[in-house]
Length: 91
Image: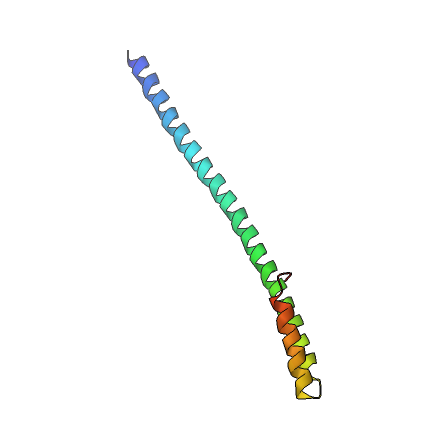
């Protein structure tokens, strides 16, 4: 009988240990997935910021070219064309 109770407690220990190992492994796996997801999100945000800075630089350059025009009316027309172009649905 003593041998049977020892085997029973040992079996109970392995079930609890197995549950703990499974929980820890699942937690580590979830952390790895979250880390990869965060890396992807950060890269996506960096790329979006880079594209936004590039488009803003192009817009600033276009406005600067408009201001190089001599008559004030030409400057206003150029700026109006840029504003109409940026408001178009294609952009």
